[in-house]
Image 1 (spheres, rainbow, N blue to C red):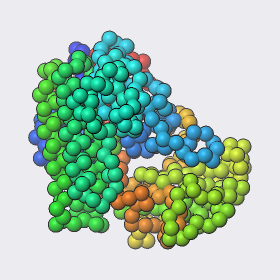
Image 2: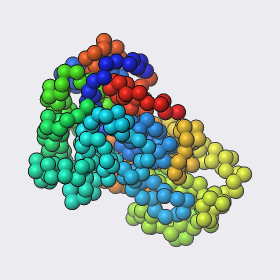
Image 3: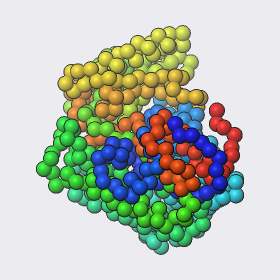
Image 4: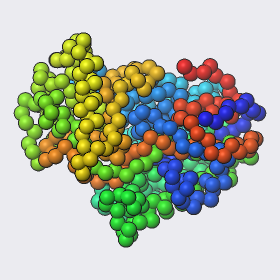
Length: 458
C-alpha cells in the first residue's frame, strides 16, 4: 500500500476510467501520456460487489458497500417481497471527499461521477453522471451551471444508450460521441472554473468492454480475429490517453494527478441462471411454473412464498435472499436454522458446473464476513460465479441452468475484482509499482495530498 506523507497542500486531479483494465494500461497498450504519469502505480482492489454502483461511492466516501447500504444498481428497500428499486445518489448518506474539501475552504469541480444525481450542494461545481435521468432534470450544482453545460452540449449524454446490442457499428459511434462530448465539457470547465480538486469519470470504457471485448480478447469463446471491430478497444483507450494528456497539460504545475478505475474487466464465458437453479433444486417454489423456452422476469412470476426458502437477483454477480421467519412477511426458515441452511445453500452454489461441465471456482460470501458494518437490506449470500467469468441471470424459463448468453442482451464481458491505480505527484519521488491498494484508500489519499486532515474512518 502507498505510504501517506503530510506535504505542502496542492491541487489534485482525479481521472476515473470506469472498468479500465490493469493489464491493458500497464502492459498491453501504447499509452504514452498515461505512461508518463506512472510514478506510482498498481492494481486497485475494488468494492464487493465490484460494480460501478457502489464502487465510485465507496471510493469517494471511504465506506464499503455494507456501510453505505448499497449492494448494486438495484436494492431491496425493506424485507417485503416488493421488486428492488434503483438507487441514485440520494442513497449515499456519508460525506464525499469533496464535502471534506469544501469544509477546508477549497473548491471542487466534479464532472460525470456515477451516482451523484440528484446533486447535493458542494463548494464548487458538480455535473452528475451515470443514473441521471436526462437533461430535463436538475443535474448540476449550482442549478445555473446547467445552462453553461447545455450551451456547450445541448444534448449532453450521461451514458451510452442500448450498449447491449448486435449493431456494433452504431454502438461504437455512440461511444465515441459520448467521449468527445463529455470531454469537451469537462475540458472547458477545467480551464474556466476555479478548483482545488477536479474529478471526471468516463463511463464509456465500461460500455466498450461489454460491447466489444470478444474482438479484443483472443481467449474469448466468441473471438473473431478478422472482425472490423478488432481494434475498437485499442482505439478507445488511445483516445482516452490523448484526452488525459490534454487535461494534465491544462492543469497547474503543482497538481497531483491520479488515474483510477472502479473495477477491471474479465471475459464473460456465460451465465448461471440463478433462479432457474433455485427452482429446480427446490429452494424456490412457484404457484404456476414458468413457461419453458419463454424467459420470464423474476418480478413477473407468481412465487409461492409459503414454500420458498430462497430466491435470487441476477446481474454481474448473484444475490441470494433467504425467506426467514420473523423477517420476511411469509418467512419459512426458522431463525435458529438460518446459519445451517445458509451454509448448505452456499455449498450447493459452489458446486454448480460451468458450460463444459467443469468446476468454475465460484466464490460465495456472507456479508458479515466482508463488511465493516451492514446497513440496508444486504443479500444473505453474495455469489461470484466462476470467479466472475459468469454473470448471474435472474429470469426463469431457460432450457438449462448454464447458458452462453445474457438474458438482457449481448454482453462480452463481466467485471474483475481489481482496477487501476496511478499517481503522479510532482512533489514526491516515484515509488514504482505498489501493492495492497484498495479503493477505500483513495479518499484519504486525496485529502492527504491536499494537506487536509480528517478523523480516520473506522
